[in-house]
Amino acid sequence: MKLTAAVKPLRINITTATIVKTVAILLLLYLAFLVKEVLALVFVALIFASAFDPWVDFLQRRKWPRALSITMIYLIVIGLVAAMIYVMVPILVKEATDLANNFPYYFNKLSDFLDNLRRTFGHYGLADNFQNNLDNLATTLSGWTLQVVSAVYGAFNGLFSVFLIMVLTFYMVVEENAIKKIVWSLTPARHQAYAIDLVGRMQLQIGYWLRGQLILCLAIFLLTYLGLSILGVKYALLLALVAGLTEAIPYLGPILGGVPAVLLAMTQSPRLALVVIVMYLIIQQLENNILVPQIMKRAANVNPITSIIVLLVGYKIGGVAGAVIAIPVATAVSVGLKDLFNYKEKKELRLDKAA
Image 1 (cartoon, rainbow, N blue to C red):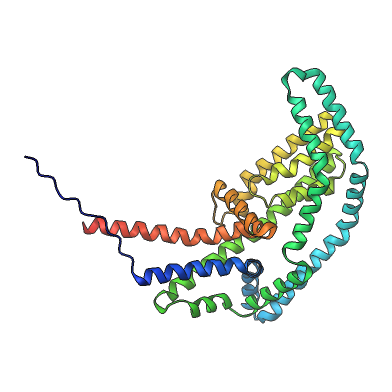
Image 2 (image 1 turned 90 degrees about the vertical axis):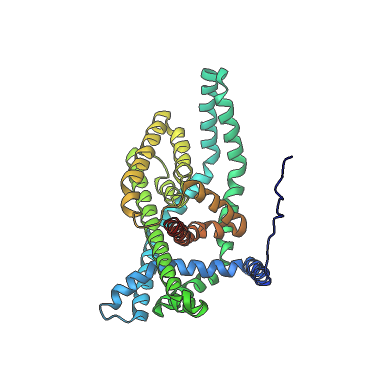
């Protein structure tokens, strides 16, 4: 006669405190979703404050008041932006206007090239696929461009929101350790020291990311403009600006920035288009093997797949503004996750030693 052990029913004990905490977290998340535009503005200000803070600390160590330091940094940044606008905008407007006026001509040139390609390699079907993609590009380009421009301006509700970001950044920086003081006041006493350390490391990583990203965008812009100008590609400044801006998009940016230049070079000469492709590949290799390791070495690395998912989620939640702040948010969160994983590993090691 076989004896079977009684199977004990699985019991899950959920305390009232757990239910209250869960409901509170859900309510906070819902509230955050309702005010996501405000949170986006605050977080953008936090990003800039994290980038400016080391420079302000540097000036403060040389007996400069913090208010005067951040004011000087603002004046320098505004002056540089104004100088770039004064020099570049007239050329960009001229190139963009000329490109818009001559777009049908360039489209016909590409169509003629594809007709020749179809006659030569028609049985492979490659030219037909490319022609279909080109047709879709021609029909959607103007509408897509207007959508992007309107989204960029609408994301922060115009100049008022830009002004608000500047004001928030100013007060975050002028008050020494302002963010840490807020965290200190909201954190239970036993966790205050760790919370302050965590926020400090998050700020450092966000600052490293922003400064590094700006330097990378500028470097790609200059390299692209120099290369296209030497090769004699039309609209070099406009195409270089596109390459520099799309550099902010992880992994897909170089492709998005290179396609317009290759298409326009193809209208001048197929051989020139091949040379432009080689130029972009060289710039990409310089970026991956020299620029990024040197410029972004202090910033936390976010997994490529994670970056793309975070970008898509950010865009879905907050549009262009959500996509812009998605990567710095992921960078900050990665600091906390590393601490969590390290804590679990140390806890498991202590349990193994105790056993």
